[in-house]
Each structure stands twice: as C-alpha cells, then as structure tokens.
Amino acid sequence: MAVETSDSFEALEAQAAVIMAVFNEAAYERVAPSIIQPADIFLDAVGERLRARTYVFSDQDGEMLCLRPDITVPTARIYLQRHPGADVAARYCYNGSVFRYQPGGGSPAHPREFRQAGIELYAQIDEAKADAEVLLRTLEAVQRAGLKAPKLRIGDLGLFDALLDAVDIPDRWRQRLLAQFWRPEAFRAELKRLSTVPGSAVEGLPTDLVAKLDPAAPGKAEALVQDYLDRNGIEAIGTRTVSEIADRLLSIAEDARSVPLPKAIADLIENYLAISAPVRAAGARIKDLFQRNDIDIGEALDAFERRLSLLTKGGANIAQATFDAEFGRQFEYYTGFVFEICSDELGPASPIAGGGRYDELLRVIGAPEAIPAVGAAIYTDRLLLAAGGGQT
Amino acid sequence: MSDPLILAVPSKGRLMEQTTEVLARAGLVLKKVGSERGYRGIVEGVEGVEVIFVSASEIVEQLKAGRAHLGVTGEDLAREQVSDMEKRFQVMRKLGFGHADVVVAVPAAWIDVRVMSDLEAVGRDFRRVHGRHLRVATKYMNITRRHFQANGITSYRIVESLGATEGTPAAGTAELIVDITTTGTTLKANGLKVLGDGVLLRSEATLFSSRAADWTPDTRATLAEIARHIANL
View 1 (cartoon, chains in turn red, yellow):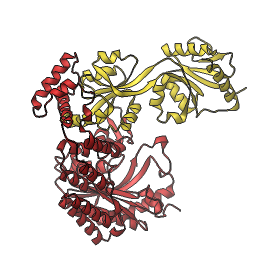
View 2 (cartoon, rainbow over the protein chains, first blue to last red):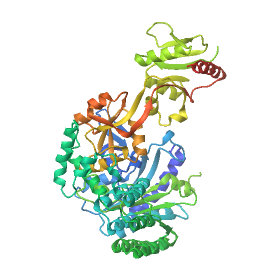
View 3 (cartoon, each protein chain N blue to C red):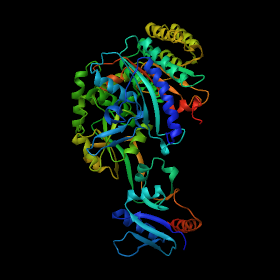
View 4 (cartoon, chains in turn brown, green):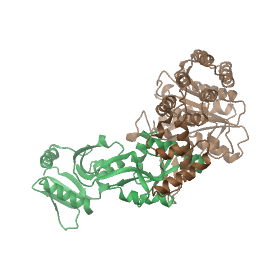
C-alpha cells in the first residue's frame, strides 16, 4: 500500500516508532541508506527474481542506477564503507521505502512502492546465537506493534549444503546442483539427468572431437578444439576463449564417461527436500533419514538443534513453528537459517516479516571474503493491516 | 457527426509502401489529406476512418494508450513495448510482409553451445573466469528478459544496442546477441550462429486492434466494415 493519506502515514510512523524502539533497545544503530543505488552492485548481489522487478534507469551522465528493491544490500554497503575489512561486529536497523516493478502497474495487494523496517547483524562469530537473536528481536517488534498470534515458518539452507557435502558425488556435479538449487524445476531435471543419462549433453556435439578429448589429459584439449575450428573454417571471435570452450567440452566428455549418480543418492536428496512438518517432528525425520542412509552431517544438525533451544530459551513458541526443507529456495542470497512470520489476518501468501542468513552477500559486494551476516525485514504496511491499526 | 475510427499506419519506408499496397488490395485505399508530406489521411470509400501516419514504434504506443483503434506494425515491436500484449491488443490479421525472426545468436566457435539451456552453464563458468556476467547485446530488452527467464537463464546482463548489434561479439562489447534476422547471412558474416531453440519470435507486419480504444457503436460499425474488406485478402 502506498502511503497516500496523512492518516495512514501517521499510523505507519507511530508503528515504526514502536518497532525502531525495540531495535534501538537491543543496540541496533539506526542507518538511512540512499534510495537511489548504483545498479550494477545491486543487480550482482540479488537473485534473478528480484532483479527482474528492480527499476533500473540511467541518469544524465549515463550512469546506471536503480531504486532500491530492498534495504539489505544498501545497508550492507554502509557497513562495508565503514569497515572495509568487514572485521567488526555491527548491528544496524532501518525503516524506509522499497520499490518493485509489478506487472500491470501495481494494485493495493501488490504495490510497487511499500515500506520495510528491519535489522542486520554482521560479523557475529557465534552464528546460531546471531540467528536466534535476529528472529527473537523481529518477533518482539511485531508483537509490540500489536500482532496477536505470529505464525512462524523456518528453513535451513545450511542443512542442504551439508547434505550435498556428505554424499559421494563428483565435485563438478555438486557445484552444478548447488548452482541450480534456486530453480527447483531445473534442479530436478539436472538431478534426473545425472542419475539416468549424465552424458546426454554430448548429443549433437562433434563426435570425432569429443572422442579425442581426454579428461585425463586436459592440456591437449585446447589444441584439439582449435584444430577442429580451423578445419571447419570457423573463426574464434569474442571474449570467450578457445580454452574456455575446451574446458566445457572436457567436462561434457567426462560426464559422458561417468557412471550415473546412484539412485539412492538422488532419492535421498529428493526425500530431504520434501520434508515439511512441525519443527520438532521435522528434526526427527531429518535425523532418521540421514541415519538410515549413513550420512553424517553432525555439525550442521547440532547447529540446527542449538538454534532451536536458543529460540525456546528466548521465549519463541517453537513447538508451533513449521519447518520446510525447501523454504528459502526462492531467495538466491540466503545461505543458512531462513524464517518468515505470517498472520491469521493476511494468511500465508502475505508474510508480515522475513529474514535469514546471507554469508555470501558481503563478499559479492566487495568484502575480502565471506562474512557472517543475518537480518530480517518487517513489511510494515502489512503489519499495520494485520495488527488492526489500519482502520481509523 | 459520427465518432471516427483511428487507423495508425507506418509513416515511411518499405513498411509504409507495403502497408498501403496490402490495404489497397483489400479495397482500402489510403489517401493523404492536404499535402503529400502530411500525416493525416482517409480511406477512400469507407466513411468514418481517420488515418494517422506515424512511426512503427509510435503506433504501438498509440494502440497501448487507446488513441488509435487499429494499427499496422511489427509484432516484434508490439511484444517488446507491451509486456502483456495479448491482454491489450487483438491480432486482426497478419499481413504477410515485413517477415523477421528475433533470434539468440552466439559465436559459431562456441561449438559446446547448441541450445538455450547451455547458456546457463556457460554463464556460470564465464563469470568465474572473467569476474562478470555474459553480456547480451540487443534492442529487444524486454523480449530477451522474458525468454531468458522462461529458460531459467540468470547469469547474464543485457547491454542495450541500437545498431550494428551483430558486430558486438567480434568487437568485444558483448558475448552474444538477441537480434532480428531475415536470412541469417549477416549473422554468418559476423561469425555467429543461431541456437537450436533460439528463435524467440517469428514476426511480421500485423494489423492490431486496441482493447483500450473507445469502442462506440459508430467505431464498431466502421470496424466491421474494415474487417469485411480485410477478409478478402
């Protein structure tokens, strides 16, 4: 909802004051990132789903800019400006507008301009503790703003990473599956291909050339490819080099000579991703599934359990929460714990708040390495509706 | 005085000539009003039509805004400029000229790349080696975005190109292109090949009607008469 009347504006401001007070009490420093952001750094950091909805434009100097489609990236930029080494723990909070393209121009339920208030916690080494802190503060904020019965849903992308790490699978396949994780259909297709006909990508390629490519002698590949191009009168143009083309052909040739991924591993991955249950039951099912398959992801599972007990200790009603193994898949920058808070009033399609861990983001926008980071955003227009403050 | 039906037709070049020819064959003879260089006209023998001569891409805007009831323009422009074209325009008739395919073309030397789905893997490798995304040069930014998204391709960035797009890979300002082609000769001459499933759109000059226009009993009656003529084509 765009804030178009002074009544709703004042109601939102009053609510924001309550939320920001909760964050300030917890030592989160208020920052006010710019609405106009450089387009490139932003588009690099967010996933395709958000990128397709970002308003991008160029100014009179031809510089590519965008209206921020979220406040997490702009806040991370402030942190990096202050701490280029990203080596200092910091807590920031914010409240402001974000802008997202809506097909057909936007509607009251799907506005192209709406507001978010949120927190970000950087470089906190105890990750389970940081995850729990961010969720607890967010819960406290929405409840103090009047939300009666928050419904909690959580996921953990770290468990999936740990699972892929623990199973016996060629590393290049692991990387491919990880890269496709964000697109469930493509992921399923790739998993099926690897477990049935891993060499299918070889179809349609020059057979004589592929037969000559030897994964055990990668050094010879480039000359073979160059020779093929010369014989067929094809000029190599552009920035992608013959050596890069040879590398990819080598990996396809290697696939063609590999035995398929065992069906048991493909099933294990599918079965894990299908888990959706109340948190405690889901934890038991994960443990059981991994034990039966002789998979040890001890640390990741311990972190999961420890986070739950910290949340319980902090007063969150964890018994009522749901766990979805697939949850978090639609936001490319999340790397670990993810959560959302819904309401009875607006239903599961319109979360009141959402957040999670995004350890890669700071590196993508310029930090020297991956930095622990976790944050959450409250959709304050929705919160106002759900908490009943919208009706004046 | 009845409400006029506004018909927008291209104002210059081959597109104008061919539009005039085809409509004349259907018995709709366009005649400019006032000077030869003017931009308004009538249809001889059909009452109540006001013809406006505007550029092909402006015709799309006129139809979108409902300022024109009917318009002749390329489907490529319509799909590029209107994200939900089916909802806003109706195709009255494909006119059989102005054929052009909007295609995805990559360097012919990319012998490892045959179909769209290869681009995602190549894009990821390219980003690792070069530290940036594959660049796609095109003037069809929206068509490109929609089709790449539908094919699950995310590791790319569009660079806008308003001319000589087929030369950008060799010049090193883009890695691949989305462009219009009729015979494919120019692509070949520039060391490029079209991907197996890389034809995004087979476009031709099309007579569109606008759902946003003001359809009164008068304009509907005029539309029916034009439709009768067009049916003779």
